[in-house]
Length: 282
View (cartoon, one colour):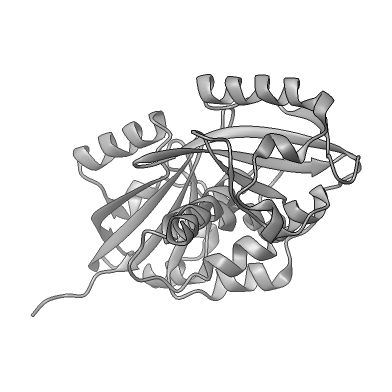
């Protein structure tokens, strides 16, 4: 259970990262956007054999309260400290309990309906419930994610008086200084954010050179790769791993491994990619 929890927790972190990396009507602002981009990306990292992105720390430091729930029994697999604090219970006591038990009895009917909507459509509209322990109003937005062989519900929480907060500097620093490349792209693979490591992989490229351009300008995907990504997003699968070629501005190429995390938001689907150079065999 502990091992499975870690895998799913990391999947969730990477996915969150991409989920809120770009909000409609707002220009890209590194600290606030990438805050959640990093978290969503965590989904991928767990299944990566080698990574230097500190997924556990990102998940724990995230300002957005998030709970991960197994769909079969409705039990909480994991929750970050922000979620535990909002619900008025310790993280250790929260994990393993039924998600429905975290809300007041009169909120259960609405929450059950929201769960049914999320399981049927992949996303449910936000609803307001009352937390059982602290008796405060909490907004809950549910969506589903598939981490074969299981599927999960992701609950994004917000207090009634919450305002958007900037990502903690330590989280942003971890993303920017990580040895692995991390980038965020929209559903059409147009780049919205790239960390320093990925920019350095392209040698003379800058973030300004990347933003708004299609990822295929630098990454050579096969038709099968593109089909796999489309299927992954359509099926709401958290992670796929691809091997491709990265082409720099000087026409230099290198083999890379991409861990693609789908962020199948209803209105703004996104991709989070972790990029790792592959060693050349002589």
